[in-house]
Amino acid sequence: MDARGLIRYSALSLILLSGCTRIAHPPVPPPVPATRYEVVQGRGPQVVARLRAEPAPAQPEVSEGHSQAGDETLARGQGYVQIGIGHFAEADAVRAREQAVRKGREVGADKMLIYPPREESGLIATYYVRLHLPFGANFRDLTADERERLGAGGVQIGEVVGGTPAAKANLLEGDFVLKFNRQPVLDKPSFQALLEQHMGQRVTLTIRRDGATLERIVRLGTLAESAHK
Image 1 (cartoon, rainbow, N blue to C red):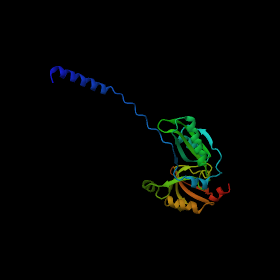
Image 2: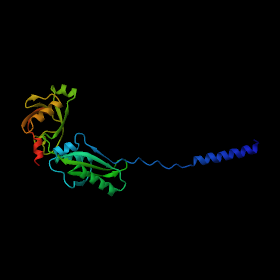
Image 3: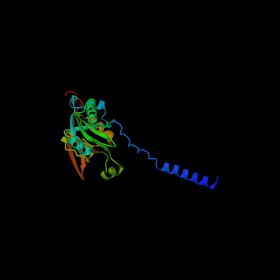
């Protein structure tokens, strides 16, 4: 190739390469959030149907949510238990809201809270039911450090639902239950078994709170009471 041809070839190559650098690729759209409903662990349809305090309403009470964590705490104090959370990816806000309310009817929610759509999650709705709970509080096993510090076995109380036997007995989140009717509580399974064995009875729980040892009288409910409502 002579010098003139080499110049023309180099110029053409430069034009082609320059053109390649100017190709604009369309921006990658953000992932579309999936429409889904998540059941709160341990609160599936069969459990809710067995424990709900009243028959499911034709239409849930719908309110605007503010803070999911704060709203759940407030609802729990009013005797409601969260049973699920829904994410609705419908771009149209009105249709997304309709889907959320329809899901509320489907799961038999007594109350639901709706939160504004977000790009990463779509519209969010949380669903609540007022349950008839024979005890009314979550509890967990103690850690090895807690056992050593307390010098005993037992369980620690978690969420307490308003209006339940646990709430009426003034049990608080963070309390350590050491004894049941003055007999040592070994662990979570044994405490659960004791609650089931004594449903409908008054029981004495020995607790440790802020370093002090207290006794609380709890009038446990029964599952049969919910069937009469």
